[in-house]
Length: 116
Image (cartoon, rainbow, N blue to C red; front, top):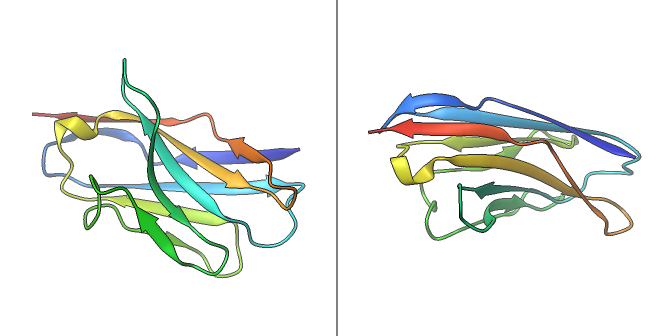
């Protein structure tokens, strides 16, 4: 089985910043693609950012330029820098990883709340 541990969420004022982290462990072989999703109350889950096993990143248009994603070299440990946060960014942010069998696993989520 795979475990994901997320941290870094919190309450910030508009314009503030947070850094989310996610570490994967368990039955993972090698460096795997990972991603961040978010889900606001009453909204569908949204893909925010993803990173390949070689470090290539892609972003949702809504966060491009504000939320850079990165990984530690040779580790299934990733970060999401949340910059210039706005109230509409308020959501539960989830980390995910795709294992060597193309199965997806999810963290428990970390709450990000942005006040006006």
